Length: 165
Length: 100
Image (tube, rainbow over all chains, first blue to last red; front, side, top):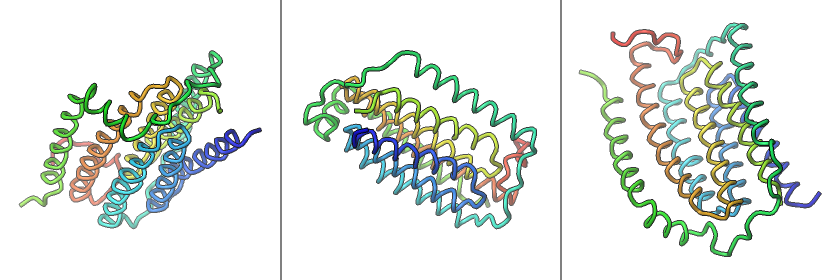
């Protein structure tokens, strides 16, 4: 087993464990901490896949901005009562459905043996330069639409969270 | 180098865990967190394919997914705050009426 495989298995095991903690911990703040861990692990996986720029953005946008927002809302609402648990029937049904979905996806992904050797990546692959070229030439219209979407989200959040008079 | 299949299986597992969270949790904030987990599993698939096909298009797609996820988190949390003001509860089962 070489070092790349070892790193992947380590990251994958930690990612699955922290994702399970997000779902199964009872305290909301603990769930948020587990989610930060899984987002950081996914950022490391991005770096191992030669996408350093996206990995940095993942840390800044997700683990930074979005999780701070989540924690802010948790502290703001302060839900002190522990949430009631679902009944056993629904719990089993939901777990069964999710296992079916995961099993179907895994069966689909393992149908054919994929190439172990990817296309040889150049030195610039995943760098800010190549990403910016792609973003501002091929994807310039989605980029502009995304800016409008963010503006709409800002206005919508202000209107929704404003106290009614 | 790790085969592409491994990354796809890992993201399928994380996605299924996120689906379990959306279905069984009775706290709206944790439901939103599980949705973020599912979005990240999809992002991992995008990046893996972009690496193995040698194209940066997948990485650009992840940018847009991040922008949409940020907007979704902001709007979702604002809705949670205004719903909490009305119900004093974060249980999605309490929210059965469209109008108060």
